[in-house]
Image (cartoon, rainbow, N blue to C red; front, side, top):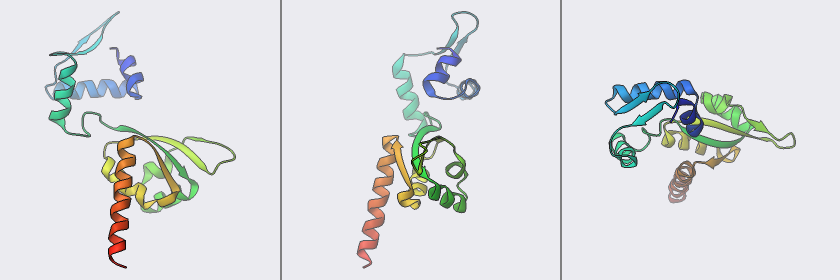
Length: 153
């Protein structure tokens, strides 16, 4: 695939793709580049299975890098995030329906567990649209918090 094709598929910039390819190559991952018309990047080895082995080698969040996260956040949610110093949540800009108090934002995060705790702290001022793994983490954290408080009453 070309850098532009990879960027489109991964929803990142071409510059990010080139930087990541350089990092992978430096880490010993067999990435092969062909320059010129019809060129692009290719992982050498045993085909698609190679990507699975790379994922297991690097851990859960690392191979995907910064994952795409979709949220709906209210103005109050932004204010709370700003108070806590969570700049990505406080400053991310997205699409807003003029008749709606919610803004649809897309951001990137490499640490879904930490982001799940931040989103839980925002309570009803944020809604996770995706990925499902993040929505599940927020849900589990909310259940654990509710169980903790139920034991103390």
